[in-house]
Each structure stands twice: as structure tokens, then as C-alpha cells.
Length: 335
Image (cartoon, rainbow, N blue to C red; front, side, top):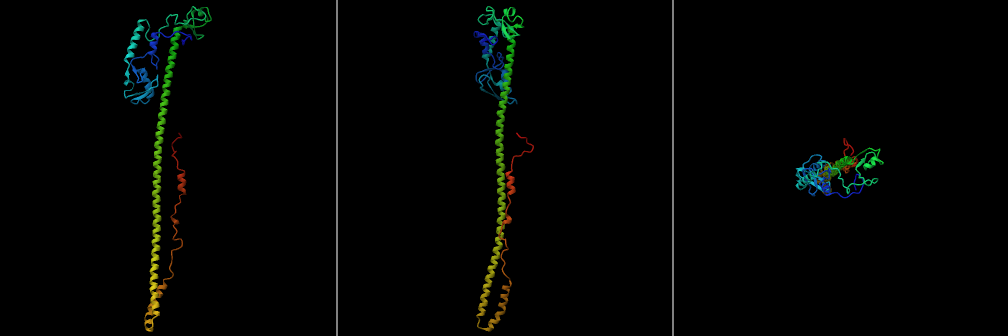
């Protein structure tokens, strides 16, 4: 079906079909030299391939990738970029031969030749069966024939040559296709940028998780170290008190032994049968007894001496601080 008239026509001829095969899928024009061949065996103008590559490589890195517009195959470029792709000399030679053939048939280079006057290819007017559709009614936006302009329903309308409108609308469609291709390239670049941003977010998340683990490991180590220091202080206080009380207990045991020996001496003196012997020892023994008794009552540890409550730690404030531990927010906007 012809896109201008809506009429069913026969297929393209050999030359038109060849031109279609030799058209770049980006600019929709015939390939311009040099023609590069992608790894997927599809062809592009080098200029179009470079434009597509640069739309993906916003920061002008060496190398890079882009997708073939025909099959979406991912093309990986080396440091030479598009210039590292192989030229398709066969296609270039075919284009040269095609252009020479078209020029030999009287076609004008670069512009589509006007439709040939062939009954098999040109639709006929529905109102005037013997008239070909050869003009375009600008007022009604529809192709028509000359008889319709002179005698028919378009006699008061503004008309223009069919081929002129054809070229104009084709140029507009090509411009629209180029704009769509450019927009698609921008969208594709934005999608790639979003994917790369996602990867950077994942990498940043991994880094922050590692840092968080290291920070808490350091906090745990600090708590363990402080715990060890406080436990050691408790041990020192315990050892000091125990040593002091053991010393006191040892002194009392020695005092008991001395008192026991003194009692034995007193009892032995009491059993003495000689008054003279008793009296000779009695004064000294009384003095020793007075000294032993004069030491007063033995004193035990003062009340509460055994308690270690003064070495307890209040962790409530630290627990509240740890429970409220959070990420730094000063100077950082919510993402």
C-alpha cells in the first residue's frame, strides 16, 4: 500500500528494492562512505555509528558500547571507538555501481526521482477512471487527479504537484524518524546511566556495610577492653581486702598461740608445790597476763567491709546512647 495515497500498488522494482537494502537504519538514507560493518553483520554509516556511540559515551571514555539499531546486539568498541570497526568495501562498491546506474538512467543524485508514468504502479482516480492521481489537494490533504481539480470536487481547492508534496512529507517523516532516533538514543543513554547509578548505589551500600561492621567491631573491642580494665580493678580491690583480712587473721592466730602458751605457764605455776618457786614466777607471769589481756577485745573488719558495691558500673546512660546510635545527618540531605 502506498503511504501517500492509501492505494494498493505492486511491489518495488529491482532498483527501488536495492535502494531500500542500501539504506542506513539510523538516517534512513543511502549509506554514506565509509560504511562500517558491525560484529552482528549489519551495516551503518560511520557518521551515524559515531553519533550513536557518542550518545552512549557521554564522558568520552576510551572504548565503550552501543546496541545495533537493527538487532539490538551489543557492540563492544576498543580504544579506537567507531574507527576501529571494519569497513564494508563490498557495500560501498555496490552503492557506487547503483549511483552510476541511476545517473545513467537520468536520475538526479541525492533526490528521489519522480514516479514514472507506469499504469501498473500509479493508482487511478476513483471519480475519473482514466485519470492517474498526479496532484495533491493541499486544502483537503489528499492526492487527486487533474480532472478533479478542473471539474470535480477540488476545483476550488489549493493544489500542488504530487511529487513536491511527496518529497516534503517524506523529508518531514525522515526528520521525525531522526528525532525519534535521537530521542531513543537519549532514553537509552538515560537507561544506561540509571543502570550504572544502580550499580554505584550497590557498591556504595556494600562499602557502607563494611564500614558499619568495622565501626561496631571497633566499638565491641573498646567495650571488651574497658570491661577487662574494670574487672581487673575489681580483682585488685578484692585481693587487697582479702590480703588485709588474712593478715589480721594471722595476727589473731599468733595471739591465740601466745595466749595458750601463757595459760600453760600459769597453770604450771599454779601446780607448783613450792611457795618460793611460785612467788618467784608469779610476778612476771601476772605482768605477762596483764599485757595479754590489756590488748583489748579483738576487732574484726568494720561493717560493710566485705561489700564491693562501690565498684559497680551504671550502664543505663551508655545503653541509651547505644540505643539511639544512628547515621550522621548533619549537612546531608535526604536522598
